[in-house]
Image 1 (cartoon, one colour):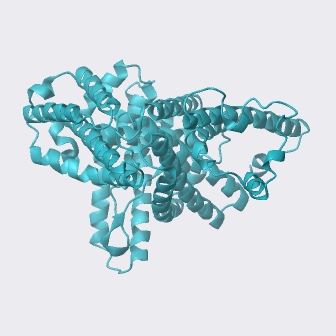
Image 2 (image 1 turned 180 degrees about the vertical axis):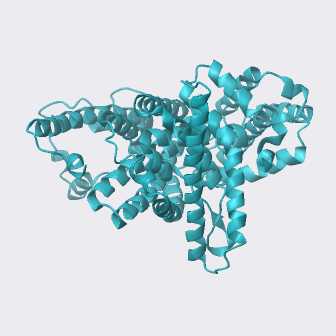
Image 3 (image 1 turned 90 degrees about the horizontal axis):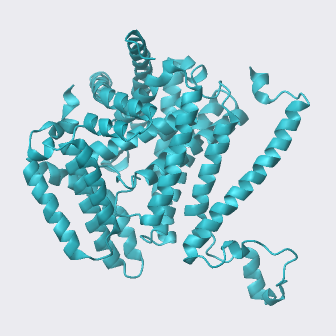
Length: 324
Length: 203
């Protein structure tokens, strides 16, 4: 899924570069604040490990072979910030030593694989792990997270390629998501087996050093969540809405479209998700998507704060403290 | 370190190799930016850049066969994505342009990575104010890349000389155990490295 140079155009390169730089900056800040110095070498060693593990080939049907990608594995072992740093290092080395993945496209690759694939799959893993519990539940959580991480990264990559005008969105989506749905199955299997093997050999790596046990700061999740949402709004949302939605379609067919209230009670600041009088349509929707995400995110933040902080003030123990 | 072959050519001696990395990295970046920014189907410019790159490749004394082989192994990926462009109007032209641009960028990066040692690139990054934690992570990764790859290879050989069970599922389980063990060994090594770093006065 390494995007080479020459595929993405200027606006996509700038956007992905900014998102990736922000993500790496968040990860660095979190690591500097919360990572004990004892574990700093582990970041570099895990990056080297992911690289070495990618050289071990697994036989797949018909004489072909595949290998571990490692984003989810790094996320499960190191937590979101550590995973971003480790996977980013792998991508930088692959780019600068093996010319695998472009230099300008490094931002896009870091955003897709380290941030969407790595951090995204970490939060899926954590949510499922808390839902399903220890043992088999943890393995299911790892498998689902690895599959989702692979396919999410592929979908965002498809969005970036179509925003650059290289491929049509539907073709790109079907091809990328189709291929990576299969690759994701392999990734899920390998990641789960590896986590199982690590748990059998050294269970304390997954519990003591593991990111779940130590309470992660909420700011980390909020920052990464906002970043991923922004990326999705910019690279995926502009295309996802190219069909008329269900209600509009029914309205068209039944012929009552014109009866829709044309003067809304409160004028919407962004009618039809497009900022008025701004550039070409697709980029426009992307921009509107970004602004919209930021607004929705702030709203969600407010609601979460109200619910969580109020609850804590009332003295209800949350789940983490119960487990401890 | 038998995996030295991964970046063996970066330590040759030639006029291109002797150029400081602080010049080569920005130059490569500039060339890639130029190629990406060129309008579609500007064939003369592409040809000019290709001639320039081939001249540099000859000057750098990297075996042409090696460069051609790297290009060939990296090209299928690009071909796969560029092939998708054929499904849209004016697809043929987009496809040809994409292929030309990608090949030129790949050529530039292969030249950069095989004429500049990675440690020199790291030094440039450090001077360019890349955060210290990222640079030290990269430096540690590069240092132990070869060690861990060797370790993985040794474990693979040990496994192949001991397991004879047929069946794909069994192979997958054993390979996963090998990777898991590799991670366990990496963490142990990281702990020893930290002790060594602390003993030498690292913060």
